[in-house]
Length: 510
Ligand code: AHR
Image 1 (cartoon, rainbow, N blue to C red):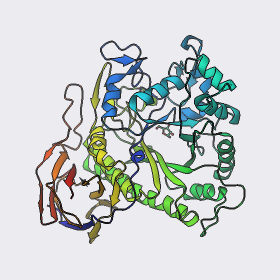
Image 2: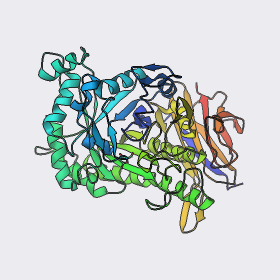
Image 3: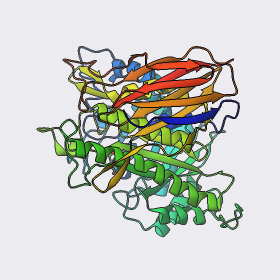
Image 4: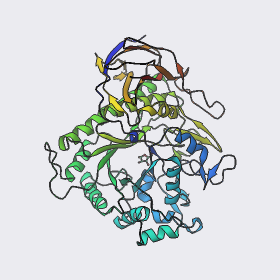
């Protein structure tokens, strides 16, 4: 048993709202995320609508997925949207040079994506092509999507079968512009982002939330350059000059890599060292969120500009025998622990973090859903999203810990092993707890002050082994169960947190 931990939550002092968009998703034209994943016109055993798999849609609807980012990723900066509209037989093909060099037939394009979002009841988040596209192309895409009257692009949309314009809020200005998105310097990109931001016009009352593509990991310089380019003056929050209005948010990407790019390891085969290195890497998200937020706070203390983590998750070697360019990896209890740690950090930074998107929703990297032909399985990560649903748009609750949270020494690293966060919404609180320790139970006591409490209901996600995962043959090896290790007495909540587990506790308040 690890050292017991003790914390205090003032239930009558709720903090910032945890945007539901922190539970956002990402679907790239990569491997079998779109083709053979979301989009399977040839499927015979599963229901589809216009080629979109409805079993996948149903599973994701159960997560209340708030948004879906598309078409990339690196693919976005080579994607020319006009090639993906109109009769399918007329659509030109292209080479997907980032992902396996496969030929893309453009059969999944703007209309298909917008239909998918409508089916999912999720907001679209489109990443425009900045790296190899033109300002005009991006500008016309917005016109095509959102304009009502008889403008050239609205007319084209109608000719392609869609009369009503769509609404689109989230508009990405490229992707990883320091790398696959154009090899820009921060300074050069800041200028380009402002130009694309400017010509991304708002038609018929459609309001864009323009997201500038941001830093890799801890490239705080990138964030600072973008903040300055908006005309923010350090320390004052005032905007001067012509910078204002270029974009509303700045993104960054962070992947959990246990051994760096050269030694990612397999998703299902790992030792304790690799496991703890993964936990350590996942916990680093806290430092990165704090670092980017600190830079932004210095320029914009009123937090008008949002921070967006539009790619996060584990990145392991592909499953043996699969295409290395398709990034297909299994998903184990270890991934669920990584997700739990990330969400706690997201909740703590809800005042600045406007959106986060896991990479990626189906069949790629840390996926929610893995397909095998017409079959599919829900991964452990899926279940963390589901168990945490109650945090969407809830008010974050600060947890004041007495003493430091426990950590263990692994090699030269201090690995934090317990993570927790809480929120309140509509007469109930939700507490999420992750025990990353591979062997020991942790006893957590939380002093819940400031409300009358009903009976707690616990759920747990765990398994006998850290590499437990779901397959079509055993789809529920890792699935949530009722959790009994919780007791509430006179406002003191005691949780006996089993080793390698993710737990949620919901308590009604009066
Ligand atoms: O998610 C896979 C890739 O990772 C994305 O295309 C890119 O943005 C990142 O490097």
